[in-house]
Length: 524
Image 1 (cartoon, rainbow, N blue to C red):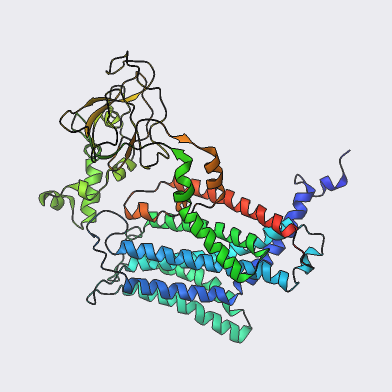
Image 2 (cartoon, rainbow, N blue to C red; image 1 turned 60 degrees about the vertical axis):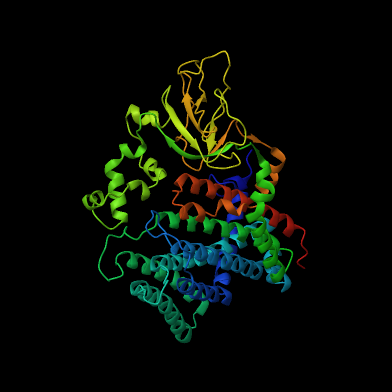
């Protein structure tokens, strides 16, 4: 016979219903108290000041402005420094909010009003984290809006550069408008100044950003997508996820230590996460890179640009501020303005020749030129593996059986797939070769080899012990998409989904640690 408690909440188990009922009030109270912390609004004002300062002091990077990408020239460094500003301020803010919500309540014994009730300590930790994460999400949203305004404004390299008064007007109106309304509300109605200012700043800053997208720097209307930078927005989302992980770290640490040590430990975890690839990550995957690709070309002399001519020419002309006819008359090469990765991101083409240059047909071939001599002598019959990472992580080529010397190096020489080196130019010092899909079935590859890819002769092996250690430490490089965007390498949405899943696992791990630490903490 089922106990009566099993029927108290419908299909939801009673204990889970009770836990949620305990968590939500704690989360709400933690969120309100976090928003009322003076440090929150102070950090927002500091973030605004630093973003303005970044547009003044950053310059002289010698970067080219006439290249493809959402950020070019000096604005690459502006974007980099602005993201770092948000990251550092977010880490400090997470430590301050977490210690105020947990450590200070333990020291002041106010936590006793919660734990003395029939509320489990895991419920307290989860509720506190949800409140902290809510306050951090609001703060991140404000700082990201400020960052996007700064990127749109760009760097003022010289005194002759005209400021973008659209950005300045919209940004200052949102900032000082929220402060003014909060001050009036505090004086007349007794509203919390910090909470009101912060809650107003979030929507007003994003309204300012959307309004800015509708106007160019001459106060003329433009399509909203003209200055919209989806890749930068994706990198900001990834950065926000990293700060939520750091907030979970701060939650765990603040159950045992005070404010200063929490800040120090969070900074240490952040730095360790940045360097984990060097100290641990490079030992996780074992493979030996033999060369780097300089160029690739098809024996048919076709390339991906030939199949996307209209789209490529239009995009290249747009990036130069001219129409396609003028672009062609000036003799410009669209390959200098649209990367090969962007061309492939435009989608598949239903054409056998397209599949051949993508290495997706039996017998399809590509000529590969290497950037310098290989580290070991290459021979016809060697397997050809490639990928963007120099240590062999995420190879484009899946494992396949090596070449049998009794077979011929010709197409359809065997039933099983294989991507092999079939010929090496004797006059190239081993730097130019022909690779072929030699099987009746092809090696499934998502893309062909590209310049700057690394070449390997064997599949990559995974070492479990370093992998476990690498998985536990938050890998901040996974959240840092700046390098890819500065190099105009599109970041797919699938990567952001993987980053979100990774951050979710990290948050669960550190909240579990927080529960363990808090369970044994004497709060009486």
